[in-house]
View (cartoon, rainbow, N blue to C red):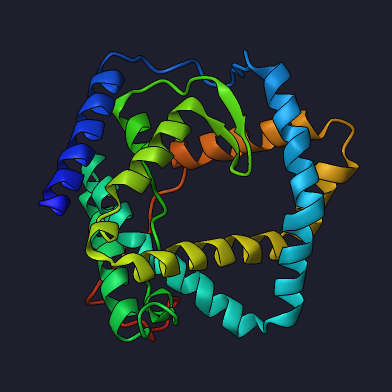
Length: 252
């Protein structure tokens, strides 16, 4: 009964989002809508303080005390858990090839890759097609909305914010997991973020602490990166299950 209630709630959220996206129209590219700039800047400064006092030292300690292969395994595990949700989003975007590729990757890494700790799928050509419900809303025609910076979560657009909330609510693994397993999912996701902060520390530090206006620069970097990702300028290299992964890619 409890799981049925959870799924009915998830369907209600999805129905609401479908209605909102149907009423929307795409915005002109290259624009920046930031009506909440004053509040966003306050949150940005608070986030910088959190990064300086907590996130940066914790990620540095994690990166320096835990060997890279272990950190990579934890990040691989967390990434693998996100694949079922990505498969659902690919189907909602009418991209069955992406769903098949991520499904193949999930099957390979969950079995041969010891639950996703290892990543043999990439070596076999089944790379991850990274997507989310924010991209699904983009495909459906929902507007990007205003730029918003959230405490801890950082930069987003209103569309990305809705997408993240729906991704969390619609995650197909969470209803199947008990409380301890959900804690593992949350914990490994946090460690994956700490590893990403450590591996990109030079770039993050230069933006946050060395730029003349860290808020404007982080806003521009986020919007450019997000829009480039959604535009998919490059074709996805789909996994061919019949292709020999050890074949010479440039035969004479």
